[in-house]
Image (spheres, rainbow, N blue to C red):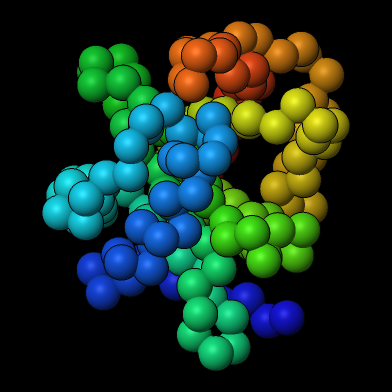
Length: 163
């Protein structure tokens, strides 16, 4: 399967919201407890796009397979170069390197930032982002936040990306 990475457009938002919705309703990959409205999703998209990359992956037929973006980690001045990254992939594209392609493209656009990756998959032992970025996830899982009457465990990683 050929995957094309491009900048997300406003016209993509209904499809991106349909990719996001199952993560809200069936997982702890997001702490949203209800699926946002298209209006709210659009406002968030526009706010993020003013300052940060927002990318989509699509197949040869133009079907969106997933998306990722970076956004401010903290509003304090000292964190101005730190970003949090977010990624969502459709179920049918899981395990086909779509996430890797998105993160490689995002890495290229974040050359002047420190990226914080929040991994919410206890079974993942290694994260391969690019040929030069391989992260072993052996630092332990930390209960973080609260959703659906449980503490989702995640690993927080800081990836330093320099020009």
